[in-house]
Image 1: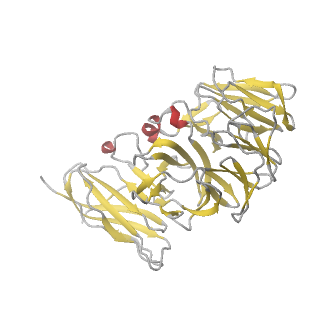
Image 2: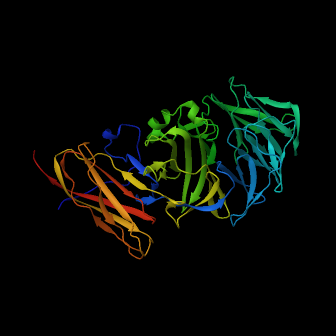
Image 3: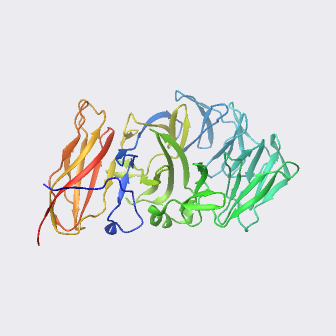
Length: 466
Protein backbone atom coordinates (compact mmCIF):
# COMPACT_ATOMS: atom_id res chain seq x y z
CA UNK A 1 0.00 0.00 0.00
CA UNK A 2 1.07 3.58 -0.70
CA UNK A 3 -0.64 5.76 1.87
CA UNK A 4 -0.74 9.42 0.86
CA UNK A 5 -1.54 11.93 3.63
CA UNK A 6 -4.31 14.39 2.85
CA UNK A 7 -3.49 17.70 4.55
CA UNK A 8 -6.29 18.37 7.04
CA UNK A 9 -4.51 21.33 8.66
CA UNK A 10 -4.95 23.63 5.67
CA UNK A 11 -7.30 26.60 5.97
CA UNK A 12 -10.79 27.18 4.67
CA UNK A 13 -10.55 29.09 1.38
CA UNK A 14 -13.68 30.23 -0.45
CA UNK A 15 -12.22 32.95 -2.66
CA UNK A 16 -12.12 30.83 -5.85
CA UNK A 17 -14.38 28.27 -7.51
CA UNK A 18 -14.24 24.99 -5.63
CA UNK A 19 -12.90 23.12 -8.67
CA UNK A 20 -9.77 25.32 -8.57
CA UNK A 21 -8.82 24.42 -4.99
CA UNK A 22 -5.66 22.38 -4.60
CA UNK A 23 -4.33 23.07 -1.09
CA UNK A 24 -7.17 24.34 1.10
CA UNK A 25 -10.55 23.29 2.44
CA UNK A 26 -13.73 24.03 0.52
CA UNK A 27 -15.93 23.72 3.62
CA UNK A 28 -15.45 23.45 7.39
CA UNK A 29 -18.78 23.44 9.21
CA UNK A 30 -19.36 23.35 12.97
CA UNK A 31 -15.67 22.68 13.52
CA UNK A 32 -12.38 24.54 13.66
CA UNK A 33 -8.72 23.71 13.11
CA UNK A 34 -6.91 23.74 16.44
CA UNK A 35 -3.28 24.52 17.19
CA UNK A 36 -2.23 20.95 16.40
CA UNK A 37 -3.73 21.16 12.90
CA UNK A 38 -6.65 18.85 13.77
CA UNK A 39 -10.33 19.32 12.98
CA UNK A 40 -12.11 19.73 16.32
CA UNK A 41 -15.87 19.74 16.66
CA UNK A 42 -17.39 23.04 17.77
CA UNK A 43 -19.33 23.01 21.08
CA UNK A 44 -23.08 22.52 21.03
CA UNK A 45 -25.93 24.51 22.56
CA UNK A 46 -28.04 23.54 25.57
CA UNK A 47 -31.06 25.48 26.83
CA UNK A 48 -30.20 27.80 29.73
CA UNK A 49 -33.48 29.76 29.95
CA UNK A 50 -36.73 30.10 28.03
CA UNK A 51 -38.11 33.64 27.75
CA UNK A 52 -41.68 34.60 26.79
CA UNK A 53 -42.33 34.80 23.06
CA UNK A 54 -40.13 33.86 20.13
CA UNK A 55 -38.34 37.13 19.35
CA UNK A 56 -34.53 37.30 19.12
CA UNK A 57 -32.76 37.62 22.47
CA UNK A 58 -29.91 40.12 22.92
CA UNK A 59 -27.73 39.84 26.01
CA UNK A 60 -25.28 41.95 28.02
CA UNK A 61 -23.43 41.56 31.32
CA UNK A 62 -22.85 44.65 33.46
CA UNK A 63 -19.19 44.29 34.40
CA UNK A 64 -19.51 46.39 37.59
CA UNK A 65 -22.63 44.82 39.12
CA UNK A 66 -22.18 41.43 37.38
CA UNK A 67 -25.89 41.44 36.57
CA UNK A 68 -26.78 39.83 33.25
CA UNK A 69 -29.58 41.30 31.16
CA UNK A 70 -31.54 40.25 28.12
CA UNK A 71 -33.78 42.18 25.74
CA UNK A 72 -36.39 40.37 23.66
CA UNK A 73 -39.47 41.74 21.96
CA UNK A 74 -38.83 45.17 23.46
CA UNK A 75 -38.90 43.87 27.04
CA UNK A 76 -35.99 43.81 29.46
CA UNK A 77 -35.10 40.90 31.73
CA UNK A 78 -32.51 40.20 34.40
CA UNK A 79 -31.11 36.67 34.23
CA UNK A 80 -29.56 34.93 37.23
CA UNK A 81 -26.91 32.21 37.19
CA UNK A 82 -29.57 29.49 37.47
CA UNK A 83 -31.37 30.59 34.32
CA UNK A 84 -34.27 32.19 36.20
CA UNK A 85 -35.39 35.57 34.89
CA UNK A 86 -37.25 38.64 36.11
CA UNK A 87 -39.17 40.96 33.79
CA UNK A 88 -38.01 44.52 34.56
CA UNK A 89 -40.05 46.26 31.88
CA UNK A 90 -41.71 49.54 32.76
CA UNK A 91 -40.65 51.44 29.64
CA UNK A 92 -40.34 49.06 26.67
CA UNK A 93 -37.61 49.35 24.09
CA UNK A 94 -39.37 50.75 21.02
CA UNK A 95 -36.68 50.98 18.37
CA UNK A 96 -36.63 48.79 15.28
CA UNK A 97 -32.89 48.12 15.32
CA UNK A 98 -30.59 45.67 17.07
CA UNK A 99 -30.14 46.76 20.72
CA UNK A 100 -26.77 48.25 21.64
CA UNK A 101 -25.71 48.27 25.30
CA UNK A 102 -23.37 50.35 27.37
CA UNK A 103 -23.08 50.88 31.10
CA UNK A 104 -22.55 53.63 33.62
CA UNK A 105 -21.20 52.74 37.04
CA UNK A 106 -24.52 51.35 38.19
CA UNK A 107 -26.96 51.40 35.26
CA UNK A 108 -27.40 49.69 31.93
CA UNK A 109 -28.11 51.94 28.92
CA UNK A 110 -29.82 50.54 25.81
CA UNK A 111 -30.40 52.06 22.37
CA UNK A 112 -32.24 50.51 19.42
CA UNK A 113 -33.30 53.41 17.22
CA UNK A 114 -35.93 54.94 19.48
CA UNK A 115 -35.84 56.49 22.93
CA UNK A 116 -32.78 55.51 24.95
CA UNK A 117 -33.64 53.24 27.87
CA UNK A 118 -31.88 52.98 31.21
CA UNK A 119 -32.13 50.12 33.69
CA UNK A 120 -31.05 50.29 37.33
CA UNK A 121 -31.45 46.56 37.88
CA UNK A 122 -35.03 46.98 39.10
CA UNK A 123 -36.92 48.49 36.16
CA UNK A 124 -36.47 49.98 32.71
CA UNK A 125 -37.18 53.67 32.20
CA UNK A 126 -36.78 56.25 29.47
CA UNK A 127 -33.40 57.86 30.00
CA UNK A 128 -34.38 61.46 29.21
CA UNK A 129 -36.90 63.25 27.02
CA UNK A 130 -34.01 65.45 25.85
CA UNK A 131 -31.77 62.59 24.73
CA UNK A 132 -31.77 61.87 20.98
CA UNK A 133 -33.34 58.84 19.35
CA UNK A 134 -30.26 56.69 18.88
CA UNK A 135 -29.09 53.35 17.51
CA UNK A 136 -25.79 53.37 19.43
CA UNK A 137 -24.62 54.50 22.87
CA UNK A 138 -21.20 54.59 24.53
CA UNK A 139 -19.74 55.74 27.85
CA UNK A 140 -16.37 57.28 28.64
CA UNK A 141 -15.07 59.13 31.72
CA UNK A 142 -18.55 59.66 33.22
CA UNK A 143 -19.94 60.98 29.92
CA UNK A 144 -22.71 59.15 28.05
CA UNK A 145 -22.74 59.52 24.27
CA UNK A 146 -25.30 58.65 21.60
CA UNK A 147 -25.54 59.09 17.86
CA UNK A 148 -28.45 61.08 16.51
CA UNK A 149 -30.26 58.58 14.30
CA UNK A 150 -30.21 59.38 10.56
CA UNK A 151 -27.82 62.31 10.96
CA UNK A 152 -24.13 63.11 10.86
CA UNK A 153 -24.02 64.09 14.54
CA UNK A 154 -23.48 62.54 17.94
CA UNK A 155 -24.46 64.08 21.26
CA UNK A 156 -23.35 63.70 24.85
CA UNK A 157 -24.96 64.11 28.26
CA UNK A 158 -23.60 66.30 31.03
CA UNK A 159 -20.50 65.08 32.85
CA UNK A 160 -21.58 62.62 35.57
CA UNK A 161 -25.30 63.05 34.76
CA UNK A 162 -26.54 60.71 32.04
CA UNK A 163 -30.08 62.12 32.24
CA UNK A 164 -29.24 65.73 31.39
CA UNK A 165 -28.73 66.56 27.72
CA UNK A 166 -27.98 70.04 26.40
CA UNK A 167 -29.00 70.57 22.75
CA UNK A 168 -25.72 72.42 22.20
CA UNK A 169 -23.59 69.44 23.28
CA UNK A 170 -23.41 68.00 19.78
CA UNK A 171 -20.49 67.07 17.54
CA UNK A 172 -20.58 66.64 13.77
CA UNK A 173 -18.56 63.91 12.11
CA UNK A 174 -17.49 66.29 9.38
CA UNK A 175 -14.49 64.70 7.71
CA UNK A 176 -17.04 63.51 5.15
CA UNK A 177 -20.76 64.26 4.74
CA UNK A 178 -21.57 60.96 6.43
CA UNK A 179 -24.34 59.70 8.70
CA UNK A 180 -23.10 58.47 12.07
CA UNK A 181 -24.27 54.86 12.14
CA UNK A 182 -22.10 53.51 14.97
CA UNK A 183 -20.07 54.71 17.95
CA UNK A 184 -17.96 52.76 20.40
CA UNK A 185 -15.37 53.34 23.13
CA UNK A 186 -12.36 51.02 23.24
CA UNK A 187 -10.51 49.93 26.40
CA UNK A 188 -7.83 52.44 25.36
CA UNK A 189 -10.37 55.24 25.94
CA UNK A 190 -10.66 55.95 22.24
CA UNK A 191 -14.02 57.14 20.91
CA UNK A 192 -14.67 55.75 17.43
CA UNK A 193 -17.39 57.38 15.34
CA UNK A 194 -18.27 55.41 12.20
CA UNK A 195 -20.37 55.97 9.13
CA UNK A 196 -20.76 54.29 5.75
CA UNK A 197 -17.83 56.26 4.28
CA UNK A 198 -15.44 57.04 7.14
CA UNK A 199 -14.28 56.27 10.67
CA UNK A 200 -13.13 59.05 13.00
CA UNK A 201 -11.26 58.69 16.27
CA UNK A 202 -11.82 61.22 19.07
CA UNK A 203 -9.91 61.65 22.31
CA UNK A 204 -10.90 63.28 25.59
CA UNK A 205 -10.18 66.88 26.45
CA UNK A 206 -10.60 68.57 29.80
CA UNK A 207 -12.77 71.66 29.85
CA UNK A 208 -15.88 72.81 28.04
CA UNK A 209 -15.03 70.92 24.84
CA UNK A 210 -14.79 67.28 25.97
CA UNK A 211 -13.57 65.70 22.72
CA UNK A 212 -11.32 66.44 19.79
CA UNK A 213 -10.84 64.53 16.57
CA UNK A 214 -7.39 62.94 16.20
CA UNK A 215 -7.61 61.09 12.91
CA UNK A 216 -9.85 59.79 10.16
CA UNK A 217 -9.80 56.59 8.11
CA UNK A 218 -11.02 57.02 4.56
CA UNK A 219 -13.16 53.89 4.61
CA UNK A 220 -16.43 53.40 6.39
CA UNK A 221 -18.26 50.62 8.21
CA UNK A 222 -20.97 48.95 6.14
CA UNK A 223 -22.21 46.81 9.06
CA UNK A 224 -22.84 49.10 12.08
CA UNK A 225 -23.15 46.20 14.54
CA UNK A 226 -19.94 44.46 13.44
CA UNK A 227 -17.54 46.61 15.50
CA UNK A 228 -15.89 44.53 18.22
CA UNK A 229 -12.70 45.09 20.23
CA UNK A 230 -10.27 42.19 20.45
CA UNK A 231 -6.52 41.57 20.27
CA UNK A 232 -5.70 45.23 20.87
CA UNK A 233 -7.75 46.53 17.95
CA UNK A 234 -11.26 46.95 16.56
CA UNK A 235 -12.55 44.40 14.07
CA UNK A 236 -15.38 45.40 11.74
CA UNK A 237 -16.77 45.06 8.22
CA UNK A 238 -15.59 48.03 6.19
CA UNK A 239 -17.20 49.76 3.21
CA UNK A 240 -15.43 47.32 0.86
CA UNK A 241 -17.17 44.37 2.57
CA UNK A 242 -13.87 43.29 4.12
CA UNK A 243 -13.57 42.12 7.69
CA UNK A 244 -10.66 44.25 8.92
CA UNK A 245 -8.50 44.78 11.96
CA UNK A 246 -8.52 48.54 12.61
CA UNK A 247 -5.68 49.91 14.73
CA UNK A 248 -4.93 53.62 14.76
CA UNK A 249 -5.18 54.58 11.09
CA UNK A 250 -4.17 51.16 9.79
CA UNK A 251 -6.86 48.92 8.34
CA UNK A 252 -5.70 45.33 7.83
CA UNK A 253 -8.06 42.93 6.01
CA UNK A 254 -8.28 39.50 7.66
CA UNK A 255 -11.01 38.08 5.42
CA UNK A 256 -9.06 37.38 2.21
CA UNK A 257 -9.91 33.68 2.48
CA UNK A 258 -13.65 34.36 2.30
CA UNK A 259 -13.57 37.65 0.36
CA UNK A 260 -15.61 36.30 -2.54
CA UNK A 261 -18.46 35.39 -0.22
CA UNK A 262 -18.41 38.67 1.71
CA UNK A 263 -18.27 40.93 -1.35
CA UNK A 264 -21.35 39.18 -2.78
CA UNK A 265 -23.41 40.34 0.22
CA UNK A 266 -25.44 43.47 -0.50
CA UNK A 267 -25.18 46.66 1.56
CA UNK A 268 -28.80 46.13 2.59
CA UNK A 269 -28.09 42.65 3.95
CA UNK A 270 -25.05 43.94 5.83
CA UNK A 271 -27.24 46.25 7.94
CA UNK A 272 -28.39 43.42 10.22
CA UNK A 273 -24.95 41.78 10.49
CA UNK A 274 -23.26 41.61 13.88
CA UNK A 275 -20.02 40.43 15.45
CA UNK A 276 -19.08 39.51 19.03
CA UNK A 277 -16.08 37.87 20.65
CA UNK A 278 -15.95 35.01 23.15
CA UNK A 279 -13.60 32.43 24.62
CA UNK A 280 -14.29 28.73 25.02
CA UNK A 281 -12.18 25.61 25.43
CA UNK A 282 -8.98 27.66 25.48
CA UNK A 283 -9.81 29.26 22.13
CA UNK A 284 -10.66 32.88 21.28
CA UNK A 285 -13.19 33.49 18.54
CA UNK A 286 -15.18 36.21 16.86
CA UNK A 287 -18.57 35.21 15.51
CA UNK A 288 -19.66 37.15 12.42
CA UNK A 289 -23.27 36.61 11.44
CA UNK A 290 -25.16 38.04 8.45
CA UNK A 291 -28.77 36.95 9.12
CA UNK A 292 -30.21 38.21 5.83
CA UNK A 293 -27.53 36.83 3.50
CA UNK A 294 -28.22 33.71 1.44
CA UNK A 295 -26.17 30.68 2.47
CA UNK A 296 -24.94 27.82 0.22
CA UNK A 297 -28.04 25.80 1.12
CA UNK A 298 -30.34 28.47 -0.41
CA UNK A 299 -31.59 29.56 2.98
CA UNK A 300 -31.15 32.79 4.93
CA UNK A 301 -28.34 33.22 7.40
CA UNK A 302 -24.54 33.06 7.10
CA UNK A 303 -22.46 32.60 10.25
CA UNK A 304 -18.66 32.67 10.19
CA UNK A 305 -16.31 31.72 13.02
CA UNK A 306 -12.97 33.56 13.11
CA UNK A 307 -10.10 32.02 15.08
CA UNK A 308 -8.37 35.14 16.39
CA UNK A 309 -4.97 33.59 17.14
CA UNK A 310 -4.58 31.61 13.91
CA UNK A 311 -6.53 33.92 11.56
CA UNK A 312 -8.55 30.96 10.29
CA UNK A 313 -12.22 30.84 9.29
CA UNK A 314 -14.92 28.21 9.50
CA UNK A 315 -18.73 28.27 9.39
CA UNK A 316 -21.53 27.50 11.83
CA UNK A 317 -24.95 26.09 10.93
CA UNK A 318 -28.09 24.85 12.59
CA UNK A 319 -30.26 22.06 11.24
CA UNK A 320 -33.65 21.86 9.51
CA UNK A 321 -35.07 18.52 10.58
CA UNK A 322 -37.93 18.61 8.07
CA UNK A 323 -35.62 19.23 5.11
CA UNK A 324 -32.77 17.18 6.61
CA UNK A 325 -30.27 19.88 5.72
CA UNK A 326 -28.34 22.73 7.36
CA UNK A 327 -30.16 25.90 8.36
CA UNK A 328 -29.17 29.23 9.90
CA UNK A 329 -27.15 28.98 13.11
CA UNK A 330 -29.74 29.64 15.87
CA UNK A 331 -27.73 32.25 17.83
CA UNK A 332 -28.51 35.99 17.75
CA UNK A 333 -26.10 37.30 20.41
CA UNK A 334 -23.23 36.11 22.61
CA UNK A 335 -22.48 37.07 26.20
CA UNK A 336 -19.85 35.77 28.63
CA UNK A 337 -21.49 35.58 32.06
CA UNK A 338 -21.41 33.37 35.17
CA UNK A 339 -18.30 31.58 33.83
CA UNK A 340 -20.33 30.49 30.83
CA UNK A 341 -20.79 31.51 27.22
CA UNK A 342 -24.48 32.40 26.94
CA UNK A 343 -26.13 32.86 23.56
CA UNK A 344 -29.40 34.55 22.77
CA UNK A 345 -31.64 32.64 20.36
CA UNK A 346 -35.26 33.17 19.40
CA UNK A 347 -37.14 33.32 22.70
CA UNK A 348 -34.43 31.25 24.36
CA UNK A 349 -31.02 31.63 25.98
CA UNK A 350 -28.54 28.87 25.20
CA UNK A 351 -25.34 27.88 26.91
CA UNK A 352 -22.46 26.98 24.61
CA UNK A 353 -21.15 23.73 26.02
CA UNK A 354 -18.71 20.89 25.45
CA UNK A 355 -21.13 18.55 27.23
CA UNK A 356 -23.44 18.41 24.23
CA UNK A 357 -22.91 18.48 20.49
CA UNK A 358 -26.50 19.15 19.58
CA UNK A 359 -27.95 22.60 18.98
CA UNK A 360 -30.55 22.22 21.75
CA UNK A 361 -32.83 19.47 20.37
CA UNK A 362 -31.51 19.74 16.81
CA UNK A 363 -28.52 17.89 15.35
CA UNK A 364 -25.28 19.73 14.84
CA UNK A 365 -23.54 18.40 11.76
CA UNK A 366 -19.74 18.51 11.68
CA UNK A 367 -18.56 18.59 8.06
CA UNK A 368 -15.28 18.90 6.20
CA UNK A 369 -14.76 19.04 2.43
CA UNK A 370 -11.27 18.95 0.99
CA UNK A 371 -9.75 20.54 -2.10
CA UNK A 372 -9.24 18.51 -5.28
CA UNK A 373 -5.90 16.71 -5.19
CA UNK A 374 -3.91 14.63 -7.66
CA UNK A 375 -2.46 15.14 -11.14
CA UNK A 376 -1.62 11.67 -12.48
CA UNK A 377 -4.15 8.82 -12.89
CA UNK A 378 -4.57 6.69 -9.77
CA UNK A 379 -6.90 4.23 -8.12
CA UNK A 380 -8.09 4.93 -4.58
CA UNK A 381 -7.93 1.43 -3.15
CA UNK A 382 -8.55 2.41 0.48
CA UNK A 383 -8.96 5.41 2.79
CA UNK A 384 -8.41 5.75 6.50
CA UNK A 385 -8.98 8.41 9.12
CA UNK A 386 -7.48 8.87 12.56
CA UNK A 387 -10.29 9.96 14.86
CA UNK A 388 -10.43 10.62 18.59
CA UNK A 389 -13.96 10.37 19.97
CA UNK A 390 -15.00 11.48 23.43
CA UNK A 391 -17.78 10.14 25.59
CA UNK A 392 -20.89 9.13 23.67
CA UNK A 393 -23.83 6.93 24.68
CA UNK A 394 -23.93 3.38 26.05
CA UNK A 395 -26.74 2.49 23.64
CA UNK A 396 -26.37 4.65 20.52
CA UNK A 397 -23.22 4.52 18.43
CA UNK A 398 -22.44 7.79 16.60
CA UNK A 399 -21.62 7.44 12.92
CA UNK A 400 -19.06 9.05 10.66
CA UNK A 401 -19.57 9.08 6.89
CA UNK A 402 -17.12 9.66 4.04
CA UNK A 403 -17.70 10.11 0.33
CA UNK A 404 -15.59 11.01 -2.68
CA UNK A 405 -15.95 12.92 -5.95
CA UNK A 406 -13.70 11.68 -8.75
CA UNK A 407 -12.71 14.14 -11.50
CA UNK A 408 -15.39 16.56 -10.29
CA UNK A 409 -18.11 14.26 -11.63
CA UNK A 410 -20.64 13.13 -9.01
CA UNK A 411 -20.38 12.28 -5.34
CA UNK A 412 -20.10 8.61 -4.49
CA UNK A 413 -22.44 6.95 -2.03
CA UNK A 414 -21.62 7.53 1.61
CA UNK A 415 -19.32 5.01 3.28
CA UNK A 416 -20.51 4.89 6.91
CA UNK A 417 -18.64 3.61 9.94
CA UNK A 418 -19.36 3.54 13.66
CA UNK A 419 -17.43 5.58 16.19
CA UNK A 420 -18.02 3.15 19.05
CA UNK A 421 -20.17 3.20 22.18
CA UNK A 422 -19.38 5.05 25.38
CA UNK A 423 -15.94 4.17 26.68
CA UNK A 424 -14.52 3.36 23.26
CA UNK A 425 -11.93 5.63 21.68
CA UNK A 426 -11.77 4.73 18.01
CA UNK A 427 -8.47 5.83 16.54
CA UNK A 428 -8.13 4.43 13.02
CA UNK A 429 -11.13 3.93 10.71
CA UNK A 430 -10.94 2.52 7.19
CA UNK A 431 -13.61 3.43 4.63
CA UNK A 432 -12.54 1.43 1.57
CA UNK A 433 -11.79 2.48 -1.98
CA UNK A 434 -13.52 4.98 -4.26
CA UNK A 435 -12.40 4.26 -7.82
CA UNK A 436 -10.08 5.57 -10.53
CA UNK A 437 -9.39 9.10 -11.76
CA UNK A 438 -6.91 11.97 -11.99
CA UNK A 439 -8.38 14.17 -9.25
CA UNK A 440 -10.34 13.43 -6.10
CA UNK A 441 -12.21 15.41 -3.46
CA UNK A 442 -13.42 14.05 -0.11
CA UNK A 443 -16.22 15.06 2.22
CA UNK A 444 -17.01 13.74 5.69
CA UNK A 445 -19.77 14.38 8.20
CA UNK A 446 -20.63 13.46 11.79
CA UNK A 447 -24.13 14.11 13.16
CA UNK A 448 -24.22 12.07 16.39
CA UNK A 449 -23.96 13.73 19.81
CA UNK A 450 -20.32 13.26 20.77
CA UNK A 451 -17.05 15.22 20.71
CA UNK A 452 -14.88 14.36 17.73
CA UNK A 453 -11.35 15.35 16.74
CA UNK A 454 -10.03 14.31 13.32
CA UNK A 455 -6.25 13.95 13.60
CA UNK A 456 -5.32 12.54 10.21
CA UNK A 457 -6.62 11.34 6.86
CA UNK A 458 -4.83 9.14 4.31
CA UNK A 459 -5.69 7.67 0.93
CA UNK A 460 -4.05 4.58 -0.57
CA UNK A 461 -3.26 5.64 -4.14
CA UNK A 462 -2.14 3.10 -6.73
CA UNK A 463 -0.81 4.56 -10.01
CA UNK A 464 -2.66 3.38 -13.12
CA UNK A 465 -2.41 3.99 -16.85
CA UNK A 466 -5.39 4.93 -18.98
